[in-house]
Amino acid sequence: MANHRDELFTALQRLLPQHCCSRLLGKLADSERPWLKNRLIALAMGHYGIDLAEAEITDPTAYPSFNAFFTRHLRADARPVDLAPATLVAPADGALSQLGAVSEGRIFQAKGHCFSAASLLACSGDTAARFASGSFATVYLAPRDYHRVHMPYPGKLLEAHYIPGALFSVNSATTSQVDQLFARNERLSCVFATDRGLLAVVLVGALFVAGIETVWEERYVPGKVHHRHFDEPLTFAKGDELGAFRFGSTVIVVSEAPLTWDASYGPGSGCKMGGALGVFA
Image (cartoon, rainbow, N blue to C red; front, side, top):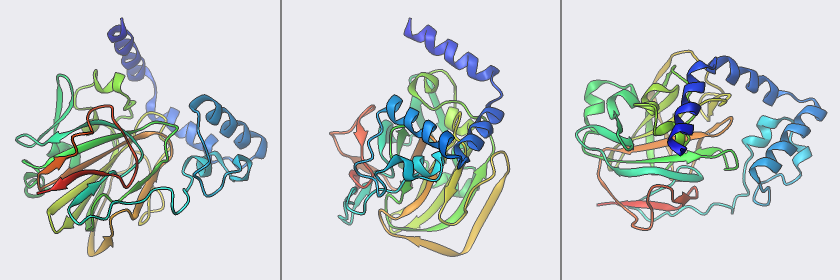
């Protein structure tokens, strides 16, 4: 029965004008009309059980817009970062959809579905080939989660590619139905140089995600290709902020070097930004 519901949910998404719906939501979420933004914030807090106890601003009416509320900052002490030299930490709060090894350049999505690292990253063939035997972790951010994305391991940003695409939901129901979903959805692929080889952090857009912003690009325009190579690479320490989602979505971390994942984690496990997920050999 559940599988039939998933099929119906996915079929409805195929019929929706995905980009129009997401842009409409974005306009509503940017509104600074007090009655509208306060109502949207109250509805979201009630429906998703959002707790502001860890936020810098704990008064929901003090946010200038719903987007400001949704991309809220946490207190400086809310997410301690594991600074052990060989650990890779969670880039965001959420649930681990999958984690494991990249096998012959392919990344596991869900039962019966995989996608290639090359198609996900949209970088050169030589660069993509370096991830062929590495490791990956996929973190799903629900609407109730903290929505800023952070650096999982120290590195220098070499290139960032914003790739237009579909806007399917990225929840478990849809990932089990849509082949190569993460490589089909609109996404921002960021490639870093580290002392363990290359590391990629991919922010994947989804249905009703009203945009992706980063600390080096105020906001990427949905539907528009944007490639940037950094002649002077930007340096990020472990735990530094990279960007934010304007609604729930997914972050995928792919490393050139293999990782040994913490045995306490598996598909469906919750994670908090800054917590150690695995260790480089």
